[in-house]
Amino acid sequence: MSDTAVTEELFFTRTGLDRDAAARIVDGALAGADDGELYLEYSQSESLSLEDGRIRSASFDSSQGFGLRAVSGEAAGYAHASEISEAALKRAAETVAAVRAGRGGTMAEPPPGTNRALYADLNPLALVPFDAKVGVLGEIDAYARSRDPRVTQVMASLSGSWQAIHILRSGGRAAADVRPLVRLNVTVVVAADGRMETGTHGSGGRVAYGAYLDPAHWKASVDEALRQALVNLRSISAPAGEMPVVLGPGWPGILLHEAIGHGLEGDFNRKKTSAFASLMGKRVAAPGVTVIDDGTLPDRRGSLSIDDEGTPARRTTLIEDGILVGYLQDRLNARLMGVEPTGNGRRQSYAHPPLPRMTNTFMLAGDVPPEDIIRSVAKGLYAVNFGGGQVDITSGKFVFSASEAYLIEDGRIGPSVKGATLIGNGPDVLTKVSLIGNDLKLDEGIGTCGKAGQGVPVGVGVPTLKVDGITVGGTSV
Image 1 (cartoon, rainbow, N blue to C red):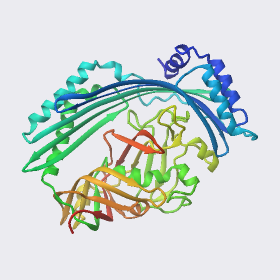
Image 2: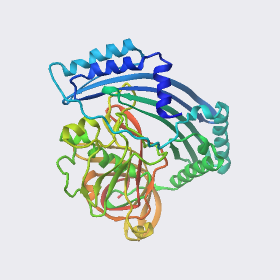
Image 3: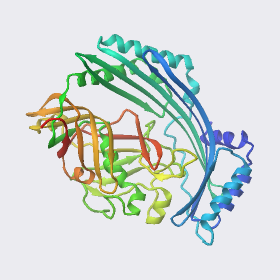
Image 4: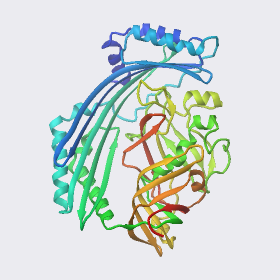
């Protein structure tokens, strides 16, 4: 069944909403506006978590609703409701009409259509029985404890969702998408000699549960979480001061996402609140640094066949060989900046208006073997995995904590360290990239991005990178 057939059934046949009546209401609500749409959403989600050998929580939720938006100039009127009916749509239309009172706009051209499907429309929640999911979590717990006597606690969780969206614009133009999403997380706690440490591994994507419930996959996840925990168990105090830092491939791309990616979103640059505002066409990074946002990667967590305004996702080059060449755009900010939307208009749910957001953001690989990058550092830090972090969009300043890191001594990886934080400025860090590895890796499918109170799934990635100087906050000098 096509995505459109699925959404027609969900939003019109099941609810009794007349499609032609809905189209007339949308036309009336958007008459004289510059842009806008009716966004219909139905979603199912579930989460199961195990701790200390027992299921601690199990939840299932289904929701449906709509958001109606009218845009006039920079202003947007937005109304949403969990009731999908003609009466509810009429009330919403009256509300959003206020934004265009006394104004006369020209409706923007609708997004181009697409038949591209980056993932199947299957519902992962319905394909695997509840008991089977519980059983796998129990097997994860037993396997982790059997691997090492120092394991004192195991936490594992499975989560999945199935989201169907239908976007109706003035003139009856429609677009639809059906999106599966699953995730497996494993955390292992080990203890020895009065010390306790933790390791975590997660994975996921826009697929069914099948691959993640395969013993070969979840055992590898347990093994990786246990490896990290044991590495941290023998870690020493992190040094402090400015030093060369080598970022490992994959998940360390979260630093790129937070410290740089948000600053390249259209709204911040239109409003001149980004550290990258007014730098289009100028050098913002070292030669060789090329940063991409690509929502078209099949089955990836951050991918979208269409964004939440109906624009087909695409591959957007943001920085090319160190030169700033693009921003991430939704329809509103693209129109006001005189450029094309890039398929990055995203929203958490029908209760939220769209904003320009990243999808899968990564730096392209260079040509340097990662072992040569390590050998080039006499004394520094090798950061392999990251925990939390924060960034100030206006200044570009960031702070990130490394959950797995090592000293580099005389060109070799030395002991693991605990408590390392990286402190710096996003645009400044890009200019200090001196070596780019040939080993680009995307993360395992665990990223969630927060902005303006909305969370959406994303992907990140980098090859091994050498940054000539980052301030490392630690516990020793």
